[in-house]
Length: 422
Ligand code: NAD
Image (cartoon, rainbow, N blue to C red; front, top):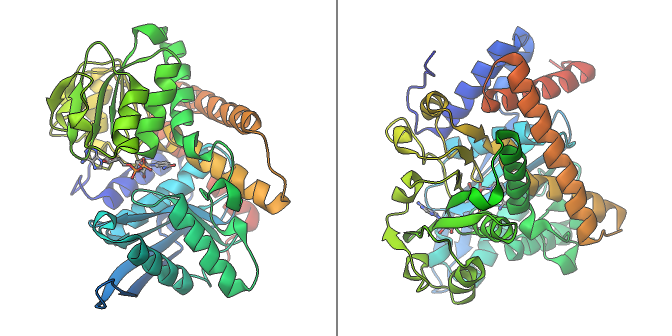
């Protein structure tokens, strides 16, 4: 049956469509369905910021807490010019389901500010972040809602959030955010965590499909935190990275890239990826998605694989490093093509898993070795992969719907145990 969404490019509609499909398959009780269908709270903040030239600019920001049923809200803060409330809502709901898929005791939340961080100075970004955080002090906190980095934000931004919140609380509260610098209570392995999780689930998928690492050509869209770390870890493990891209465009090289050299070019020298001198055919970033490969990893933004282009994808495995890169109608096309999909709420859950470890370490004031972090992450990712794939097979659904069903079932079960305060 085709998946129906009015506007497949509205990520919140897509998130709702998947929730509804999974809830229906699960036979979710009416009351629980109605309760879980809506976000718990949404806040819009108009953030005044004095710009470097003395002008006052007012930015619009959001924080959405989708569900606090299984624990404090958890989810990143996004700085981008095209942030919308619907996008933040969708991302918050995905955090709820993602935390439940990997079975960590968090709910789901997300934040965003409409701004262009590339065009702002560090001082402007700092003032904007601090005012946004100050407005959120009654909403966030280690027991309430714990932000983290996302597109356009990083460790430095998290340090400002932590410091601002701490100033208002009158004592240092490291556990209010994750993804912080190591010296401020960050966790070893957090920076690599999402890419490492991607690597672990790719290993599991090829093992399941009887493929070998050396025979796997990997194409990665996006070369930020997730894309570049996934590229590095996969190439170290023996996969061949044949396609890479960033916002400036893509490169495809059948012989494989020297990934550390690309990382040095993009992150060390801060040059546009398509100008990398180490070989490869230049192409538009989106074209890269349609090049032949065994593993395709969208790790940039939403709505990249849609009903308009899914038929052009030439991969055996789609591993979603980004949130929401594939629309529901595209899922139908990929299913018919026999693509093995590792859905975002499983594939990129390594980040939130190590965020959970960071929160635990901050609260204990006791920090783990990197090997310990990575081993625990491997356990979580492999167990979650096995649970979702087994569930998909035993219920005759695809991996994505299986992930949603497992997640909704876990949240609904917790909700039933708590009782409906309604
Ligand atoms: P980032 O800001 O570090 O990097 C984003 C990358 O995507 C950059 O290389 C940018 O140039 C590129 N990009 C942007 N628009 C593009 C386009 N149109 N075509 C090709 N490339 C484009 O962000 P990130 O933290 O790596 O996040 C990437 C995705 O992964 C997002 O969807 C995010 O929500 C998701 N995610 C991130 C984490 C995390 O731990 N950072 C965890 C889970 C999911």
